[in-house]
Image (cartoon, rainbow, N blue to C red; front, side):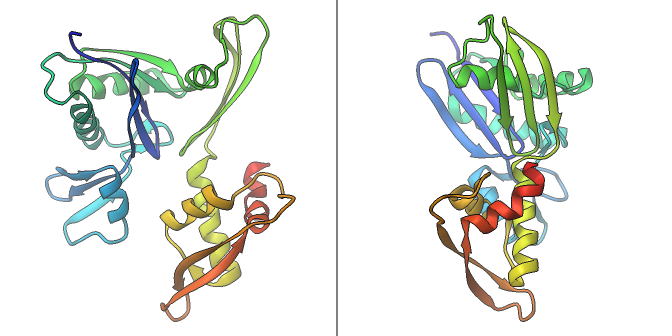
Length: 252
């Protein structure tokens, strides 16, 4: 095989790369740790994600992609180059890339994404809307004559579309998604229990016990954080129905 064909999902919270016949070969948080003076990336992915809140002097941790679009061109280019080189290793042939993009992205945002991926080492780039990608991933045939309602909840945006006969007849994008849920959980725990937790803890709570409707059998988990009054470590028990109530306004 001469070169690689890659599928890339550049999300606000995660970057996923897949290869035909191999499936997903890379799934990393879309975080970078970089030198503030030079803007050179030191770490990317999980190492940068776990460094958040513990950055040494002169180093910052950032998400270069915000709400599905590129917020920092240089950091995004370096991050994509790093992850693509991880996948293709020392292959001398540049890969062809299919990348996902929000359905309502502007022409400028589309050109910027193509430019970033080309600058990161791709030979050619084809953009496909997020909701169409989600339909394929869910096993829906987009060419079917009847409509399918697809809701793709990402880190920065929620994309919704009616897909029929290979095209989107209606689509809408909301700026309420996974990151908004994390922020709401952090706020809720501070107000109710006077405890300060980080983004990682909030995401763990969301993924472990979060729900859109109350569970018949309530489940709980322990959350670690710091007291907002004393700054000392503390542990609280959080229930699934509490998180459901907390997220209800956003889900509505």
